[in-house]
Length: 499
Image 1: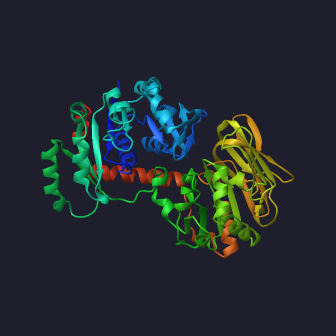
Image 2: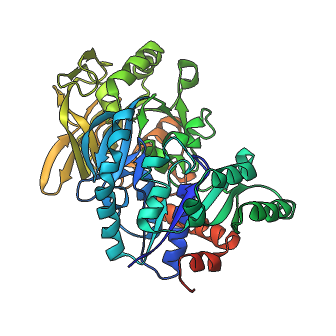
Image 3: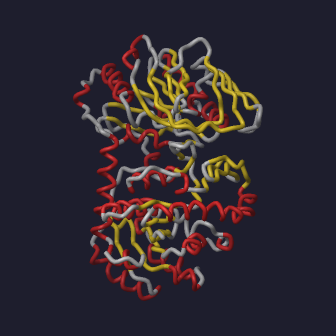
């Protein structure tokens, strides 16, 4: 039977995902076979596993830290918001439907068997499971039907470490208030607390640590300094989305759609020296980038309407005429076409004119496409001809099918033994359904090479970049930071292990 430990937070963005990832890396380094688990995740960033199931990106990141292949058992329930009041509900990697929040709340307890089946599958395979909570365990209006915080801790019989974010201020009130709003059984389950994102001299903090330990009768097991770690963030809380200014020779502008999804597609670009990735919300912010990217979205038609109303559609068309490279991914690719049709009411129904920058037509389907792919760019003429034949890997995750008229597909992709065309390209406008296209293969280097040539920059001025190696180094840095600032002996004792 696997040992377990759970990280809960006093609020959203207290650093739970990073703490879980760091602990997983430490346990892996210490010789254990480990896995992450989060019973319910709410995020627009998702991933497709090798067997075609959909799960949250945070648990994918944590699986990478643990050195294992992501598995849908690590995140049995994923909620993808479609509106402020409703979400697409994904259970065990497959869509169950779209529900209003109140309807989901009424029936979420019925998903406990799915949660526990997934958790027990992991228990059979791993030595240690590190569980992540969501938001705060002290949401008193939600506690009675909780399946992700103390409810999950009870089901897994997991000891809990409570983390507070000192960078936002009021950390002692966060910790004290959270504990005091719990019942006795829940309080007893908390075995330690962590002060996260600390800046400054720890000696000044020490009197407060002793006082909070006395008030809540829980030991402080770590004071984690504020560190800049380049690993996937949780959804809209990511600070990456706040970058609006170019700071490098190559300027890439990603349109920050209201329902933007899978913005982790751009991490491999963002982490490179010499490239600036910024997120644009209006015409003034767009300026004169070298590359404009229309990203994925949970609601293509609604976000296209926003793009039109705020004037960015016209501005992008102007840049297209000026020769700027335009690149659409998934929902962004659909927008670039001539027409969007929703006969099955997937996105609210009706028809909508697209941006008319690619000769394509999209019909939204009732079933979601979920698959991992490898691809090769097709034959491209003109100034982008050097992209022809370059390789990439990624995954498809979309509810629409797109018809391409009178132009070549952007690439040929393979899913298992099936080969098909993907996307479209016309002059300086490209579109693809493949998420993660910039992460691996030769395509990204080729694309950057074209931009460098247009700007008169020598490629050797931009260092070669191994994204996978970079991520591994970041996980090791995170683990080292936690190991140096956390009482790992106490953590092992809390789990009933001696190290």
